[in-house]
Length: 635
Image (cartoon, rainbow, N blue to C red; front, side, top):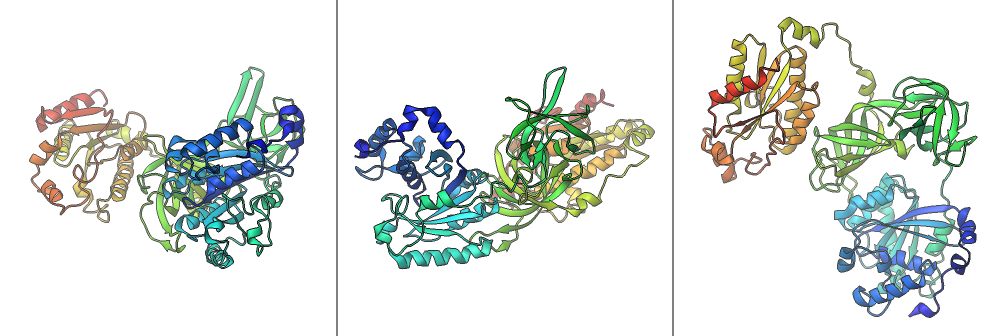
């Protein structure tokens, strides 16, 4: 093997300080490798690491041993093993997670992210692309442009990568055929123009053989362009763009080590700041001036984009995590409704109307997709209609947040325009998004102050408003029990209104079906109607299956603490089915009734309801009495 001739930079071992000083002032290029599965991404990175002599002798010895044991190249070095470190990756010969590697040459430093090619792991590709300056799109010369090639190219362009290298790999397996190379370039160029990629650098390579990686290949004398490493070392990257933009810093935490110091810490997203600069805190209209720029190494006279600092202000003002500090005369836009592109990353589909957690910069808010405008077909770039987004789906949507958020469009400032979506139940990241602009109605629809408010409505009725939310399977007895409870409350002189699931679908929600998306929208509308009714001082009772915990939680959050009362009518499915006078369960089991809760659509029982009624032990009358007794202390 090459162990006897392979030597890393001797300066590393001899004088590490001198080595670090040598590399300190080089520019840094962050890039990703992406494309379809088995296009050779990991092998390419392994070859770059090897040829740039960034592998130590002990690592090389392990690589040689692993190549013989689990490699795919016989007795030759399997360079992919330098990157594919997970056991599952080595067993299957695929990349699953994003692997980051550092290497350097005499001209530049690099951080490369090896991203998975499998469609199943597209979410990991987006993660790697989010911080990259350049994307190396690999194509297997035998297979040409594939769906994942298109998807990864589209996503790379979407997240703002403007430097694209089209590395046509495995040229050795097509006998370095120039006609095949030219054909692939033509196919890719036609696609690239569709999505707005203005230009790209095509290079014929063999990651395994080393052709045109660091040195020119004799096998491709017809190619006159740079090697891959030459291009990576010389490509121009715009490192000053964010410096030239207005100053923005999202507050990450309030630094309060003692009574005499209060600073606001964060990483500067764009622009420059100096002591004496007038600043504004958003959301809000509070202004002040910068007193000091504090760092661990001492105060600075100026700081710019990319630096992490603590700012102290001349005035004692209210400023907390999630707010953004901007120049007083160049504030950010603040809004709560946006158009955005969303890339969906979860097995469970995205459902409009369902509440998710949005993290944008250091801000966190509840968010719902109010309207899916269209989905993007990555093969044709066609805009196609749809109500939900499936795994790896890409859609342009309108979204609404629970509070106003300072932002800039993603194309102008990724730190203040990019966000992730998190599932409220399991805290899993389910989507990533890029804000285009604020919707005009976000500015034109302020809340109006009304003199006769909910307190006045409640006082004249001499009662505290409540929402009694009955949930359970079809046939559990929700409507029957809710009806009895309302009769008892009415007899007690309470002002009530019962919203029943079947009745509401005859009018307000008659346009909705029974898909998961329609069920979510059904509950969202009912929650809003119930909120208006409680604002009028009423005690509102609702009888809906409301199968999903996330939507019941969404409705709960519309109400002041203690005003939403979840009542779980707990009935086993076999008991509910035996009571089914409408024959719905029978139809569902025959397949004549689709998306029926408990049969082919899930019901998620409450985890901590305020009231639980076991209908196998209590009659409807007894259940109503038990509910009234439980509520008596609330009124």
